[in-house]
Amino acid sequence: MRATFDGAELVGEPGQSVGAALVAAGITTWRTTRREGRPRGIFCGIGVCHDCLLTVDGAPNQRACLVPMTEGMVLESGDGNA
Image (cartoon, rainbow, N blue to C red; front, side, top):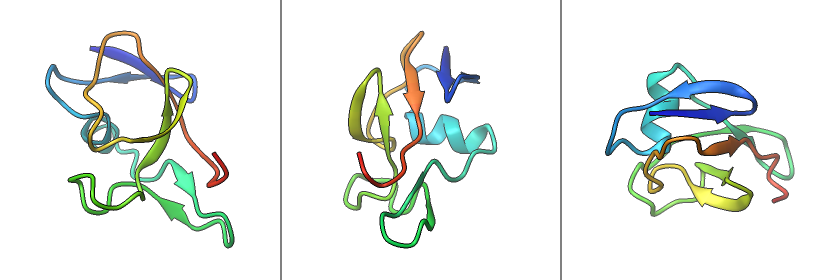
């Protein structure tokens, strides 16, 4: 499955979460915290925390660990203000 992340191609497997596809591609951070700009990515991996938030097809604040990869999706990193 092919998607884009901040304009770059991202390849994932059917049934794989967006977070897993990002980590498999070597991308471990995709947003920063509001106050100090600290990098965030996968932390719990099960949807309990909110460290892995990103924008999926224009919908902000989606948890990458819970969103399944779909063909052609557009993923965008966040700056903690979404």
